[in-house]
Structure formats: structure tokens, C-alpha cells
Image (cartoon, rainbow, N blue to C red; front, side, top):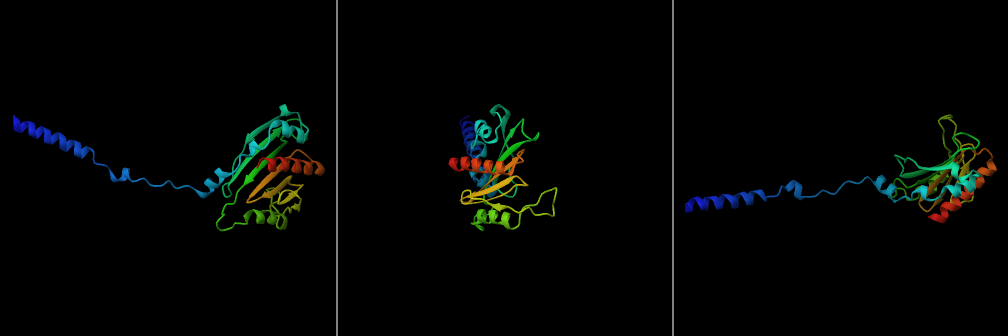
Length: 193
């Protein structure tokens, strides 16, 4: 009986030793692969935090209760975050304002990306789906470190450091009012960053 007890103890100890053996695959942790664009996008400000309904209301002369705020999509080739400020009762049914923050997609290779982004809008313009062969060039405006706008497209880009900010307006036809919107909104953004 004593030999049976020794065999039983040996069996239990062996079972414990073999069951505690670690699998080398689970013991080594691999560092997660993080996409650089995803990392850069995460570091960008949320443009929905720049303005509230009351501010948009004061800029576009629409009652605050008619303004809604909705977070937007992001770029697939450029790290970006967007926010839409829409309102009812404007000149058109789909009136609104979009604010977008764009980050440098290749900071190690092209550190002056933001400068050249704005410069390129002025020199080469931007194509639209309606007119894919017509470049719509942008005009210089004195906002932040560097800026440009195009009334037909209802867009204004400005640069602060290594980021580009876009203000896009739909539903305001008067070019003078668009400039006012670009200035007021950019002032608000610059005060928040």
C-alpha cells in the first residue's frame, strides 16, 4: 500500500508540474501594430468642441434652437476630424457649416506639409465632382499664420503650426457674409487651440 501511495503522490506531482508548463506563444506578448494615421488622428482636437449652438446662431443669424451639431467622418489618407453645424430656415434646405482639422499624413518625410497644403490650394486649386477638369483656385486671406478661401466652393483653409483647419459654408450666398463667417469661426477656433 505504501508503494501505491508513493505512485499516487508521484502522479499528482507530475500532473501539477506538467499542467503548470506555460505555452511559449501565450507568454510572449507582441506589441500591437498601430497605424500612424490612426495615432495622428487621435491627437487631433475634436472640432465639435470649438463651437456650440449659441455661437453658430450668432454667426449665421439663425435661432440657436434651429442649429444642430453632428460629428463627421474622417479622411482615409490624411488624419482628419470633422464636425457639422447644420441649421433650418436658411437660404437653402441643407444649410450648414463644417469645421475640419487636418493633420500631417507624413510628418517625418514632409514636415512643412501644412504650409504647402495651403500654398497648393492657391497655386493649383481644388477640383469638384461637378467640374472635374476645372481647378478652383483660392485667394489669400489674413487669418492665422496662412490662409486662403474660395467663394464659389464656400471654403476657407487656414494653418496654425502643423495643422490645417477647414471652414466650409453652405447656404450663405453673399461673399461678404462668407468672409465674416470665416473670420468669426477662425477666431473662435484659434481661441480654443
